[in-house]
Image (cartoon, rainbow, N blue to C red):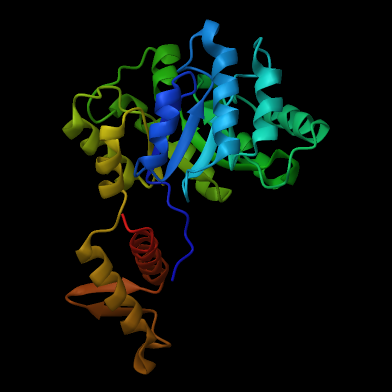
Length: 294
């Protein structure tokens, strides 16, 4: 049985909304980002911090991965957010506006000074033109264990705002940035999550964008409404046919007569040994979903 951690659906929940924090305990999202930043008005920042940290300490979220998105350190709320988040002990802290490795180095110093538990990881929001231009160096920051960097989250709305690129169906203006960021993440073993779909009334549009992100290679998609969970969970899962074919590929290469062969023909298609890893990933993904029961 696979111990793969699923991150198909990663739902933002506004920290200022107590009912949303409670409802999140019942939703089928793989991960939750309890938000102190963009989803919270300035006059509600302190209330959000208090409610989010209390909710994380209380627990009741089951196996869902819990992430707290704090405000940037240079804001009036950043330092207090980080300190409170560390005391709450989420699975990860999501840092906004990470535009260079220096930001992660600074956060590492803060985490050390605050004696943050080793169990808390750091995710980085990639949401500025500077971040795209520096993405390889940002990804390489993972090599310094002090940074605790484990993943990237694309902030497509902020990227659109700062570049004037249009958020159009198919996201052609953003595809080069998305793939460059994905390549940097994969080169350093980081998870990578797609940005949000803004039209909460258009579930079919969300489904199409989830499928696109899955085809591009993303681990999952960040979401802003519970009705987006099902499209994400469905799209970021191997189909029955993909799993069937994956098992056949693995079994075929395991046969004694194929152990030393570099390529074999299966059901009319040629498969090389590199396809074994891809096949095992599909099987592991399917087993992780089955184990979760969703």
